[in-house]
Length: 167
Image 1: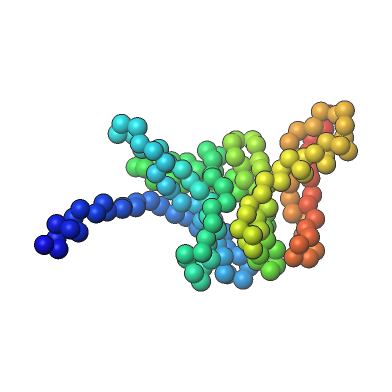
Image 2: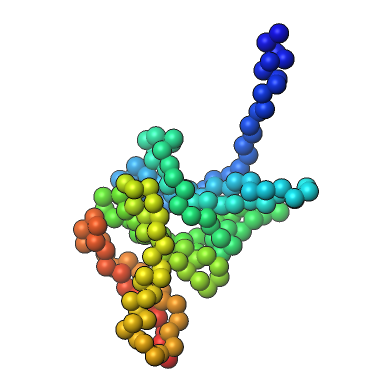
């Protein structure tokens, strides 16, 4: 009698791959990219590749930051994936509670995200950074700047270096 009752509940199945991308300086947090089934069309499966922040001491505590794009992820023929390590950089604060993610979203286009672990949010700050650059060189043709962390001065203050070709 117990067997028919158990068979009537749907069984959730999960199959996928995950790759560790970065660890915090204190080792308490890590960033992973995970393969998740997005949808099926006929017999074709389409995947998403969310970047997640995990607490290594309690794996139930995590949040999704953003999705990885075609510049970061290359799907293989057997429905797994590889990471292009030149398409992502992480700059952690010493306290391991904040960091910047520099992510190539499509070939040639970079976005900069500020991640605050305490609030559980990732904020795209690319437009804010670029707006400051464009004000300084108004009237010139400016390419998308390359953003590099110079250093974290305090846990809540970082200096960034912007490099761009103007003409």
